[in-house]
Length: 79
Image (tube, rainbow, N blue to C red; front, top):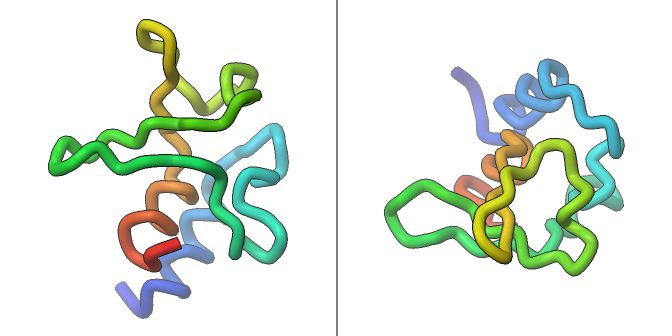
């Protein structure tokens, strides 16, 4: 499967982000305000303007992040 960075490149290539991954920019170093919810695998988006993200799923008063790029950065690269 390659290194984590190679895997990230593969994920970016196959992910269609209408926002151009702006929550992970510049240079995919600055991950937006997100929180991994324990062992559930769910990512809670804590961004104030996150409700407009097409890769988010609303729940109650919050939103889960379903972006594979954000998930990879958070889980494997500690960003």
